[in-house]
Image (tube, rainbow, N blue to C red; front, top):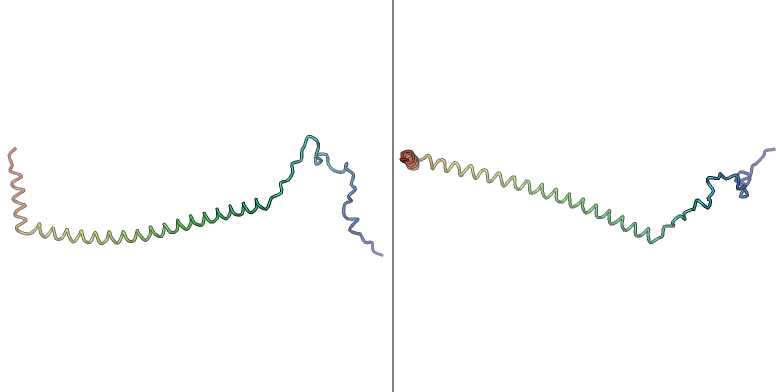
Length: 122
């Protein structure tokens, strides 16, 4: 015949003597027990709303940073193209001025001004 153990035999009895509990675990008059706060539903809702506002704020700031980065990249390309066109125009203007200055009449006029300036008495 087999011996069966019942659930009641395995579980601790509710009539354990107080002396079985360690003395440090028992509350005394010098050790007050603080009540455990029970979270209210309104506090949980308030916390969830605050968390959602923080999350949405972070998303908006991240989107603004991405938007600013793409705008500055697009503007950087435009300004580079504008500088390229300006440089080409300046080179063309310099070539025209060089041709004008090295022409015969302008060359002789500038030469006369320089000779006159060098022979000024002090």
